[in-house]
Length: 183
Figure 1 (tube, rainbow, N blue to C red):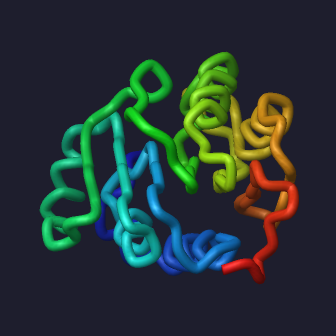
Figure 2 (tube, rainbow, N blue to C red):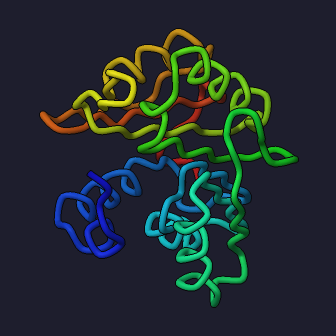
């Protein structure tokens, strides 16, 4: 069932999950973030408050169009339609947020996303992933399987895990000495 714009914006569990993800970020500020699978841009808007620049993409043209309308006043957000992992933005990022889309991909594409992320992550970069744990009908994969694929594909320092009955949130850092207390 395809949920509505209002559902993703207003549902308590969606707002709470976004707040937990934002709270899991280890630094107060980032230079350049990438958020593939941004959908309507609700998390993108919040990331823009903590990042100099946010590159956000989704394969759904209608979702990107809605996000562009909602985020037009946020000049530090760059939205586009992109089919990740086949397409990937240029440059490097100190934050990559993988949320709510990897379980729609086959396992080999999940690993390809992890490799693309690894290649574009800055030396001090952080990668955060958050997914619902229930399997998606399209692939049979849920968040647990997606995150297992990420663990296998990412030779990064594991930093954080928050797991509930409904979703899993994890982060990795390229900088082994990274601390939540470092500014």
